[in-house]
Amino acid sequence: MPGPKDLDPSSSPRALLGAELRHAREKAGLSQEELGIRLFVSGSFVGQLEAGTRRMQPEYARLLDAALSTDGFFQRNCGAVAKSKYPEHFAEAAEAEAQAVAIREYAPLLIPGLLQTPEYARAVSRAYDPTVPEDTIEQWVEGRTERTRLLAHPTKPLLWMVLDEAALRRQTGGRAVMAQALRHIAALARRRRVILQVMPYSAGAHTAMEGALKLMEFEDAPPLVYFEGVRIGRLEDDPATVADLKFTFELLAASALSQEKSLALIEALAQDYPHEDP
Image (spheres, rainbow, N blue to C red):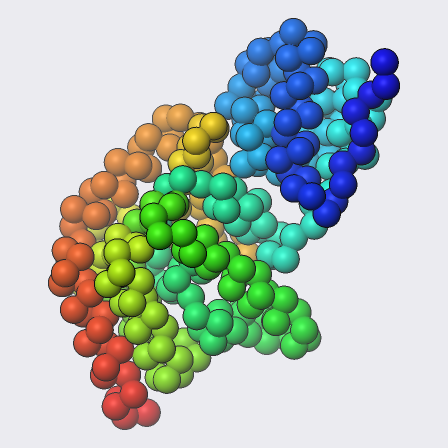
């Protein structure tokens, strides 16, 4: 019987690779947990590979081919899912984000990518690395802009953002860019596309002072949490960790301003920005 055909990179490589993995695992008579043992990962990680919410890395492809006797199929095809328009540390999180049914995020220092305007994204990208060529900057901006297409659907995914007041007051790209960025956020909130709250300076100490936080839920895979630092990022699927950080987000939202007060603050800042003295 012929083996599976190599994947077409012009289709949806990650979804196809995940479907082939599920087929090969079931054909081998293995559960996700049993296959996970052979890969030295959790069963939920295997489920995320099958659902396409995690990228298949070469080391896992090699182990899968050995465990499932797939004659190098996964090693040949994992390259089809490796190409990305996003920085390496964020690529896997951005791709998982595109499949999430619910996203809850706390942003302490900058407006999150899903809410950014192209002008704001360009200013952020230039600040990250002022030495890179202009075409690289534009590639990063294009990647961020593509992410915002998730908001084209009127209700999916559920998007709940808590923005620190610092992210709203840090002038990124200048006053005009900030005014435009905040008007854009306010418009999304007014059409109920995002649940939006602001963590004000007046709240003092809170439960997420140590950094940014993004929680993602999926229809056919376990939830994930994403941690990000300076040029580093990590996805975590440990159930206890995810549950603990979900509680952290709930406490955070309870300490933040209401949606109405948050919107009022954002619109006031957007109106003040063009009139501030340099």
